[in-house]
Image 1 (cartoon, one colour):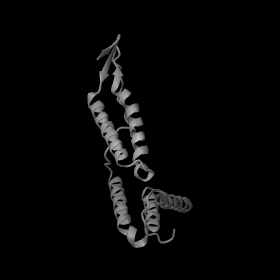
Image 2 (cartoon, helix red, strand yellow):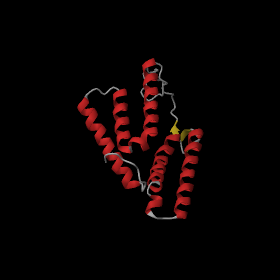
Image 3 (tube, helix red, strand yellow):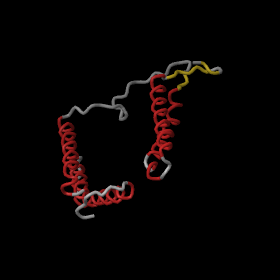
Image 4 (cartoon, one colour):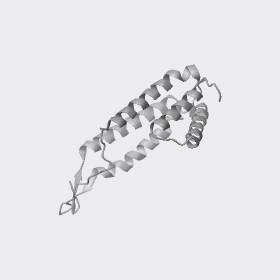
Length: 166
């Protein structure tokens, strides 16, 4: 594509994908606002839609890249932290399985032992699985996550969740 004296390379695949997502977000927001403009109806939908459209506005310019007269020659990097890689070590796969099992156990036990205790135990287990061994930090961070999650859910969602302590 040429605009003025510059030549641009357009990544049409990404452009079509993000435009489709933005269109779906706009459609959903218009539909949600058409049903009701009350705060309870739009509490999560409207801020999320605005955030998604802001991300769209930031992504679209990246789909158009100016071509230079001489191609840049780059040496391949040995390690790219942004390149997705599947875990290949056995310990990583075991850790992923343990985290998935802990999440499943938490969901299963939410109504049995209470949201607060289940979230506390899941957060502590997840931190321990990921390598945190300092008990003070483990306890303080777990307590903070539990309190914020429980009171945040209560403020946002009018759902009578069973809690054992909070």
